[in-house]
Image (cartoon, rainbow, N blue to C red):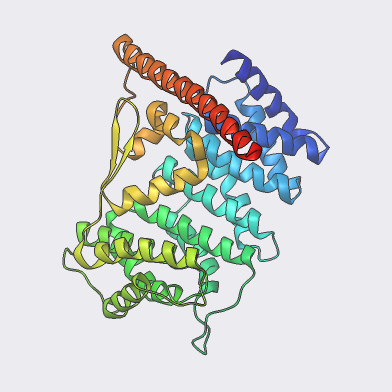
Amino acid sequence: LHCLLDRVNAAAEALTEKRPDTRVKALSFLINSFRTNYMCLDDTWNYIGTFIDGIEHVLKKGRNQDQTLAAECLAVFCLQCDCNISDWLIKFSPILDTVLRDCSAPCTFRSACAITMAVMQLLAGSCDSVSPLDLMKTLEVVFKGSCLKGDGKAPNLDPAVESLHVAALRAWGLLFTFLADTDVGLAGKALLPTINSLLQGNNVDMRIMAGETAALIYERIRNEVDERFKGPTYTDLVRLLNSLATDGTKSRSKVDRKRQRHSFRDILDAVTQSDLTETSVNLGTEVLVLASCEDHFCYDILCTLLKGGLIRHLQQNTQVREIFGLGPPVLVTPSMLDRRSARDQRRLANSYSFKLRTQKLSSRRDQRARVATDD
């Protein structure tokens, strides 16, 4: 761990280098390190100021690639570091918000800014200087670009723009998961007509994200505002969800149709019956049960940010565990290690036996082939 920390320190110092390639390599290393390892960083880390100043430098003066990586690195670092995120939110919000609003900025950079701001809001909690409702309005302006046009037809957008709109809606949904109870009803009800329009778009990722957001809105409103809530757009929404859950349009790829039907069957049940299939995630000594739309939404975003390192963070990272109410990390006892070691030994023994059996059968097959050739 000390060797890794030394390399992280060196990468943090390299963020202010003049060569873009050097900055890109440093950011890529930092993102991968923060994803795959939980380093218990906090205010006592000697290079924290160097890292924050370096990220700010890249966001302001870097190029498209390293700017996008810098925004992504900031989000992953905030999940990694046990510090006061509110100060960083106040510091970076004007920079990220300006990029998000700038239609001339690269779509990949704007997408990273949207997710990063939402993650920082989630971890910072209530912050008087930065309002989640204001950010949600900004995000809404972005993803409304995928709504139906005035003639009722879906717009034909560039794939990068479609990805930006999906990221903006995902960020909106993440903000909605921790929105104050007093704002849930107003914000959720106002977006439902837009959701119906997005469900009729051409992009399968946007349709699925719109459906998941609809399920999230209905879940929170019914749990915290009105348990019988349907709203004026409910009938049209159910019709659209049912249509997408049974869609067999040949103009769409087979993979897209399969993904869509699988997703919208669950979404339809969540909206109409308030019933969601529980998903269990094995964490070794624990099991994380995703029992609500809110849990699924947060888990999917963390999967996108932390990728293969998510399980380790769920086991060890206090901030990530708090999102799902898992409590303090579970200490691994010697008996647990013994059981894990025995399981690993059995797996290796079975793997070795399989290898020997494969080699033996292969040699016999070669002999049969020679006999057949001689005949």
